[in-house]
Image (cartoon, rainbow, N blue to C red; front, side):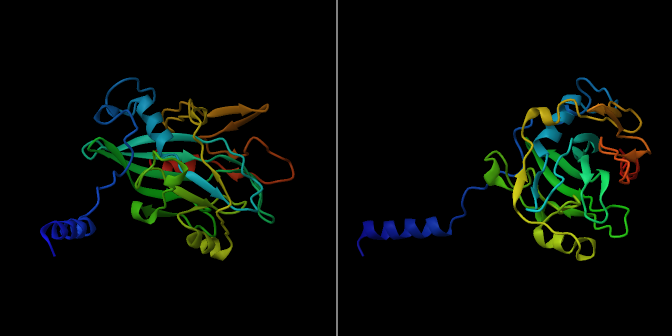
Length: 266
């Protein structure tokens, strides 16, 4: 084999065995890092910049996949953010799904306060997802809620090329009941095998109006509590029934969000 041919073969082998370029993890699109702490406006007095709270909540908001039989998809999401550690630059984001109704055939009710908590941290110019807590009938007889680490989560990068591994997660929503899960198989095992999910239609809330002015603050410093929609009032942070702005006389109501916010220190 002549010298040029040998060089070509060696180069081809090196291309096969050399690792490819490392793909960036997390999100580099959030315009805050260390300055998320102790700078700018801080309406809820938690040590975090209010706009940073919004930016982090907006960019990490999950994609929901609904089942083909879903009949109660309407919701009006809100959020809260808190710092868990400045030294590790770690935040938790509490997403209040605020579904208008649980449309289960035998156990349906007005208002469905399912939620997710995303734990993220800032490092090297990027924000990275670490953990996700997914409520699934929390505090009920078939509670299937759980924490999942970032490597147990799916990331639908095809939906938006700006997303990456450890960016915003893909979650599966149980038909009519709105429990959330990290995979189809986990869903099908949820609530004593009564939950069912499929990858039928996605809801990616990428419009900026979805979360603008939706920061509830905390139970101690409430930026939003009472919300009136279609002439009906809803109290999001109190120990009262959550009616989903419906409150139909012939259906029971769900319990509210405060018990969950208290349990996780929001």
